[in-house]
Image 1 (cartoon, rainbow, N blue to C red):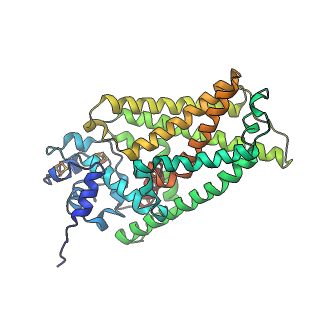
Image 2 (cartoon, rainbow, N blue to C red):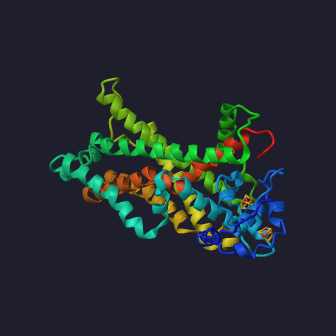
Length: 374
Ligand code: SF4
Ligand code: SF4
């Protein structure tokens, strides 16, 4: 016989992180019956509600179900007790982000008081790049060329080590959560890992799970727009950096920045920006106009990521527009802010809400390695 020790501290933390209706759950099981993504042989979220009420941290961390939930809120909408299980699952994910984040850095991204410090780090680093690397009189040079203010080489000196740190941190989080999944469910596999990764990739690209949402169904298209728009922008940034290095190393002669509007890489970037902003617009307006039962609660953690993502894209578009109309000061000033937000978005990714992509993909891959779901 095992004795369960309730940990009220864990329950309170779940409640603080958005699961404040947790204690209203009376275990009717309606939520598990209504959830369309839950596997028949391991239904959620009723059991996770019980674990959260009892503060069973070790049952919640490394619990693959927490990550299979896509916060569609069908369960919250139909919960007779008003316990909002969708928000409780999101709150548990929030705690998990912090737990699995490298060196515990995730807690810094959850504390609004630390936001100025987090932004000050890239602001100072980019200011150093400008102070040391900018060409004298860059502001009055025509045409406007952003690398006259922030040379690519100097930017890379900051971004490359920072991104290596972010990748190491992301991998450390993935390894830690995979280890805990294995500790919970065992490591026997029915499907090869490579095939499981492929199945996950296909599912993510099609948003298979999210398409099953009913109450919050429009979020799927908004999320798809944001997802593909973001990756188009990421591809654009990567291609521009590659083109710079190809020219610099003399491998070939390719177009230099600033690229004309008709260049395919520029077209990709602009389509990506419009697509991502459309997705953000739909998500934000739904959150502002619909009640939390339909769209879920919004926490600081979600808002920080959303605002940084929006400002990264918006400042990129504005900097480009001011460059095209030849207004030097706003173009350079906004480009500086843009670089600060790019750093914040990408380098802090493993510690912010952004990391949901990593942990959810890891949970889906773990699940796909088994015929019988965990
Ligand atoms: S969360 Fe709501 S629907 Fe689910 S078991 Fe508790 S009371 Fe029932
Ligand atoms: S929010 Fe949606 S996916 Fe998550 S448990 Fe509820 S019904 Fe299932």
